[in-house]
Image 1 (cartoon, rainbow, N blue to C red):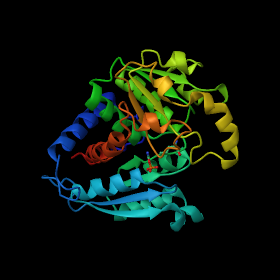
Image 2: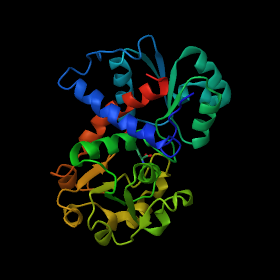
Image 3: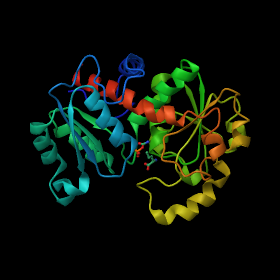
Image 4: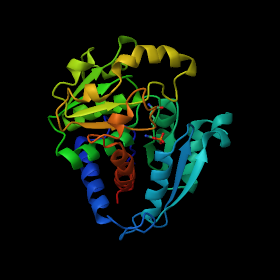
Length: 301
Ligand code: CP
Ligand code: NVA
């Protein structure tokens, strides 16, 4: 069974294969209408469950469109509508779903929910974001970097802001794809201890971005964070906003990324988000291509 649960638990060669396949798939259907089928139909006769316990625009639409382009069918399930939220164990849910569908993508809160789903399902399971990681996003981000600026190996990536779930997948990727990762943010919002050794820390964002090939940020308040933390986080993170002054200290061709959704003028200014170095909408598009490659990988196609 080939799940796609996290970047650090997927073999390095497989990750490289997924990025390369994603670029090939994207180029093969350039200029075609979004609803046009791919030439081969690797998911023909396949049913895919897309489970969301949290809101989503990109993950939901990109998985749905991707499955359809590959000839499969989807059902989008909200966690609260399922018995999942009402006491049935994840193990039983996984066993039952496996009798109906060929692949499960789940966006959930606790990582344990994802792990239980993978342990008890008899079909592949894909991580569509948990409180701890967001591997599909970073596969799209690596693809986006390489499309614009070539191999990411040896490059300097700087994360400014909250050491959250998206950062965690960047940290996993730094080891697997062999790039340098620098975290700049306030100590209370440091990444979780399990990630130590995968990145370095520079508290001063102006020093951190020197020589950066890529500057990344994300929302200051994630879906799993209490809304009551909002004001405190804004105070803690204000100095880590990615604005034109900060980008000017990175390399001239440094890319800017944000997984979206963004709070414009908080973690990044519109001048940067819509500026010449920003690739935020390429990242969003590449979710589609990268996840098609991930689904093929899981199904051995
Ligand atoms: N970046 C991302 O995962 O976006 P959604 O929350 O809209 O899926
Ligand atoms: N860190 C954000 C990412 C959203 C795609 C969150 O978890 O809410």
